[in-house]
Length: 99
Image (cartoon, rainbow, N blue to C red):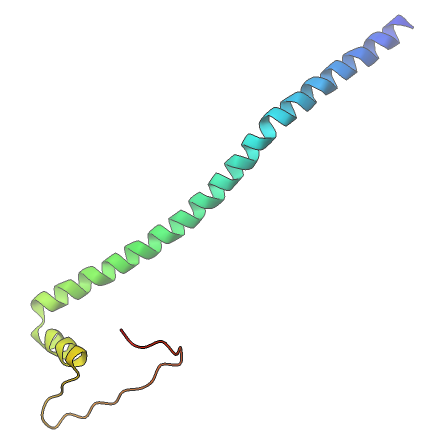
């Protein structure tokens, strides 16, 4: 009878230790999972920002070096046109005014 009781008590002690370890590390495991998900979102956002920065860098380069591009942008922003030029403005489907 004593060996059976010893096994039961030993099993209960091991179970309690595992349960305590689970309650101790489970919140940290959840926190780690949340941090990994946030990191993945931030990496996607970083890639989008890097793409936008590349586009803006290219636009700055064109504005500094390409006279025709600069002229086209200026005419578009100021709603001007060259003699003999016809401008077609298409309304956007999003309903937002063009900036």
